[in-house]
Image 1: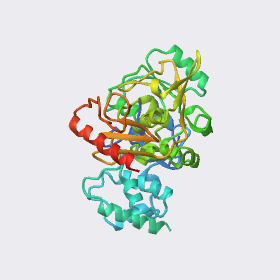
Image 2: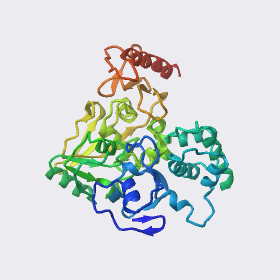
Image 3: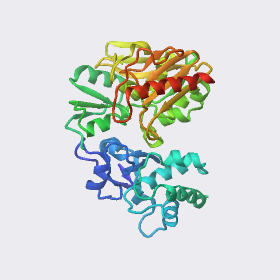
Image 4: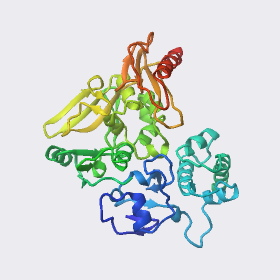
Length: 150
Length: 250
């Protein structure tokens, strides 16, 4: 499968979750694992450009598809992706555990709604849990990311 | 929190899938995986075989048929949500699918998967029942149509046989007025209770082992909803009455 533009060997075991394959086999630990049943949103990645939960997919299912993880948004040495820059500017994170999942969900949200309304923002981030920020700064970061993406 | 051991199969055609389902003991069909994968991770489901249908080509169509809209097994909920055809023929389905979990889940989850999974608190089975739709099940024995009224057999149980694949769900054109309302503790959670109105027909979800049809004048009659940490039976009955009033106020 192609991950962040590079080809990788397929997983050895059909039981391997995509989230574990990314972290343990490929070494891309930016994708975080929280609940492992699709509720927390920390493991969100892009599959062919659309955000999905990597803990609710078997790695073998991603064979032949394009996977983008948080590491793929801004390769080393490149400026931050607009969504990352916005989270940085607006203090959209504290401990950072939920952040990769939020960023990937927001990338998907802005692809669907480049100029999101407040309601669309709430709808777009409702599937991700953050226990630090209280979400106000994350909402601001989404608005800022939309501005930066223009 | 890792799936138990299983044998993985990834057929590339419906015929191949039906052959597998006919020959394997204790097989589960894996479509979007947004319900089945959590069950596997929790080890609440331990099928010996997983038959992943995601490699089947041409099974993701959403098309007009018999003055309604047919949604094939691999059409994602997000595709149904964005479909102009669904919005024009069956806007009730467009409204209902937006209540299913979150967009990130809908990017992967399928409409047919929600129906085959038959969670009693799920929206889409109740919509199929309210509209009087049907599903098409295929097996090596042939193809048959199962009306919504005869489909839901119990909690997570349907009349789809182990060797059958649900290939398509058909939703009739939505009558006017229509409405779907639900109440949940958190956005995107399963509903404590919900109501679907399609013209004069009322279907309820979250208050019985399966979605049920009810009389709009006395919607909570005969119901014995379950009790859990989130709601008492009395509260669920109250929600049914309040949401029915709201749905029929239009």
